Image (cartoon, rainbow, N blue to C red; front, top):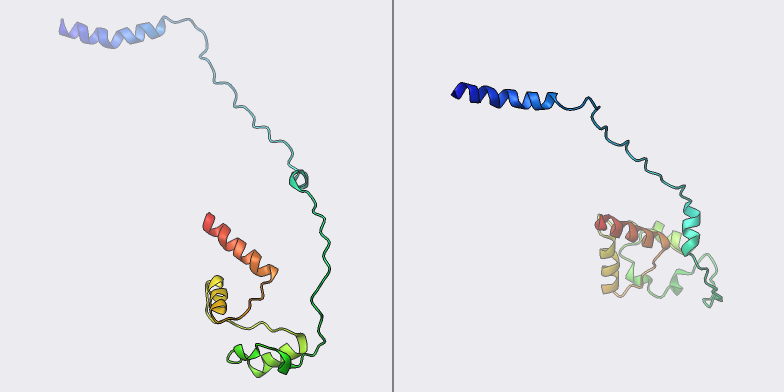
Length: 139
């Protein structure tokens, strides 16, 4: 009798499986196609952009080149960094870009200049660089 129970245990599922109707198994629904509308970045920008009326009149007097280095008020704060070539470029162009060494953190340069009482000259590319650094840290 124990063998009969064992046989029944294996044969019963086969018999039940064979008695079903001959209907094909239900097929999964076709995957829905993701519809992405055409994206127009200019239209997306225009949706949020509001022009600002701004009327500004320059108030800072201009200067003539070449500069007279003796008239630069805080040139002595930079003497230790300026080579003769850098001084000549300042006189000719009104500014010079110098190597700040191996400083990795741009904010440290501005912080040390502030500590030394040196007024910063911030350009648009500096702000863009800081934005990229902040974005990288966000990721």
